[in-house]
Length: 189
Image (cartoon, rainbow, N blue to C red; front, side):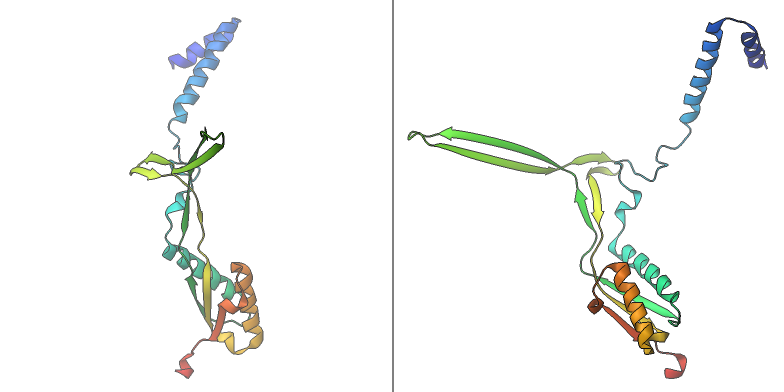
């Protein structure tokens, strides 16, 4: 209550320095409350890279299979489906590098000069939460080797073409890498 009375007194006076004091107090209050906001709320970890930087190839394939299966199940006539994706390689990390160039030029006794240029590349190491680690700039997604789609509607050539087109365009792969086969039903077992 005393703070309110003090502020009322300051507002009643015509002295400008008192207004500056009020503005300063508000600024200090804002700074104090800003420390309560978490610092990593932007989806980045301590080295500035994305939090999903430690995704495994298995998790990547699993997510991709779910997305493709979800997309395929939306196509009219497909019925129930399953998707299996194989990869050519795993997730590749691209690390930050520092580069040092040195050059030397020497003149020998016969008057000919020789030049020598050396370049040295070093991976940037930072202190992370789990000790020293290389600074990851980005990750390259794995290359899809092949896709097998097992679905109920695969006995219809139009459905097979639609599924193949959807998979090839969404994954940017050739049609030769996609196989669409008929799913075994209960009466076919």
